[in-house]
Image (cartoon, rainbow, N blue to C red):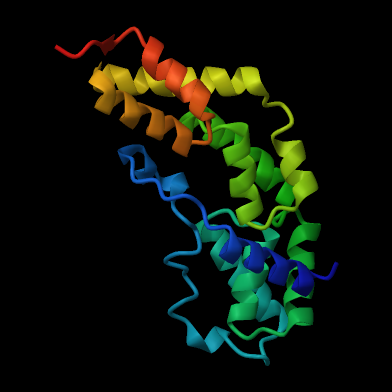
Length: 206
């Protein structure tokens, strides 16, 4: 499939399958933010247009990469949004891929390693995040291949421990909040309910 076709498919999937909202305080960490916000090229209208050269398109992509890591699909979508011709955008990104600056495999593995470790997200949640950022299914599957039900359970336990260390769970309302916290990170409702019920810092209501 062409770059343009892949980008259209990715954009369609993002529109049809929006990520679940998550308003927990832990979601304020920097790597949770969408890197497409506050884009450094947004205030640079001279970079837009069908007459942009390959060199200008490459420079625009480099500025975006300096702002935050990006997938090829994200970079391509940004260039196309600015009116860059598809063949020019593809050539510019190919030149960056040739020197390792655009590498979806490396992006996917780094994303999973960072967010599985620092945020305790489940395998399914991490895979969904990669797909939402334009990583193809095969690369997404490979990036999460080392995660399984056991690692998901360990991650969920660590999240539950962190939650209850901060706020003891007292009664059904607090248990429901903890369950929701875990489920929003991709963990199964049954696992979340068990951890909320069995947490050593869970207290009975008076």
